[in-house]
Amino acid sequence: MKKLILLAVLFSAGTAAHAADQTATPQDAYDMVLKASYVLENMGEEGLEAFSHKEGDFWKGDLYITVWNCDEKRMVFHINPKLIEMGDKAWDLQGKTGVYLGRELCAAAKNPNGGWVEYWWPKPGETEPSRKITFIVQVPGQPYQVTAGIYDETTIEQLKKQFGQ
Image (cartoon, rainbow, N blue to C red; front, top):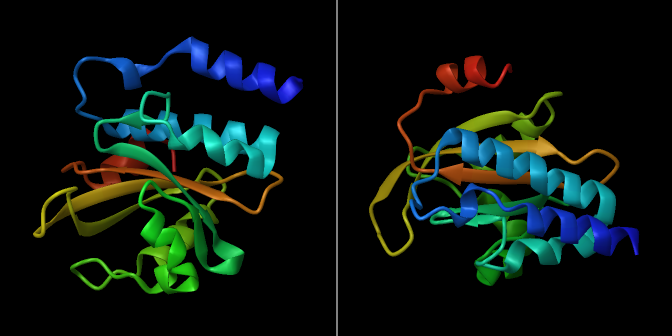
C-alpha cells in the first residue's frame, strides 16, 4: 500500500514533463534523476515500471530515465528494449569520441552527489552524433544507478558548479 501511495503522490504532483515546451534543460535532467532515484530507493525493482510511460513524470521530449546495474555491467531499464537485450554488451557501447558509456557513467555514479558525463550520440531518428550530457546518481540501498541525458552545450565544469559536485 505504501508503494502505491508513493507512486500516486509522485504522478499526481506533475512536473515540467507535462509542459508544452518539450526542450529539456540540465535542471530538468537533474531533477528527473533525483525523483527516479527516490522511486527506486523506496520501491526497488518494482519501481522500474514507472519509467516506461511517455505520459508520466519521467519523460520530457528527448529526456527520459535509464537505469544501470553497474555491478552487473548492464542496463536494467531503457526506452529502447534492444539495449536491455544486449546485456553486458551495452557496457562496451562507445560514443563518437570513444567514451565507453557504461564505464564512464558508472564511474561518475561513485561520486557522493552523482556526476555528469559528456559524450557524442545520435539524437533519436538521426545518424550523426551530437553532444550529449548525462547526469547519474547511485540509488541509496539499491544496486541501481539512474541517469537522464540531454543534448546541450553546457560545459561539465558549469554543471559541476551549478549542481555542487
